[in-house]
Length: 423
Image (cartoon, rainbow, N blue to C red; front, side):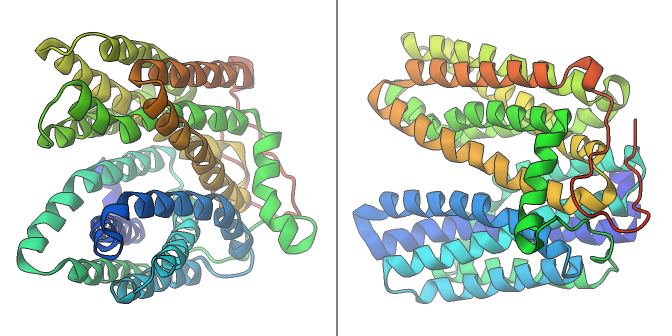
């Protein structure tokens, strides 16, 4: 898997992704402490609103990344996003009002909504060989998972030495380092990007039209919903399950989330070889169909009396959810790459980023409200039903007959675009 790091351009871009992720992780911890300093016992409400703003920014702003890619160089886009995030991070410690936190969080996440899909669209052009790109997708998944484990530990260590406000300085350093790494390599420009019909509005909607036109992309959206329904249980309801149902110490919350991360990491390591042998569809659909089965098991564990055995069962279920979600999410970039032309990649990745986070915007509050009013067993069954419906829809939309990718072109293509790659 690490052989792709021999490519200098990809190596610098991957390093930029890693340091930016570490900066984001530090910002998450620092933002929680800032909310407590400014709002006291209302900190959870402030953080909940900030997370909602994050998702709204992702859904609303990401489609603009595709439009901007048709007009601005990729490197300028990514560097501008990094500099914006660094500036916001440095400003956050100085806010005095809660509304100022909300405004800065929106700016921070809007910049991330431009950076991430632009980064995703560049990688398949930097690594045109399918085997290399598959390895890069697994490395990216690995980076996300390890960051979720590493950043809180790094933040805890730094807090022993510095005040919580200084964590934002670490965040800014991460984003600035990312910008330097992006500047250090030559990236594909904007000249090959497809332009939508109807000016900027057409460019913004281009990615959505691509998803509507390609069966594989419609199936990918359904798979994203299955992942969001299952992941919402983990990220929203784990704390209540650990503390209230099993009455376990707070440290076991990290153990449960770590089990989810471990399952995802292990799967990311195994996927390049598995995908090479079986193909995307044969891996992604069974993994998605496994999610509702796992959630049915979670409902049974939540309904049973807490025992040492059922606690181990929860850890196993969380690891299985992490593994299945990784098996669905990691090859998603390959599905996009095979479904559109190279010139349409920026718009397609921007649309996928927006639509996938729209799924989380639906399942997060559903998991929270059901968990508070009906309990974990009912929540797991309802979200399991959502995951099952989404997985079945993906199987219908992405039939074996329709699994052969066909390039769709719904915009105004530039002269002689690079044809879509077929497996």
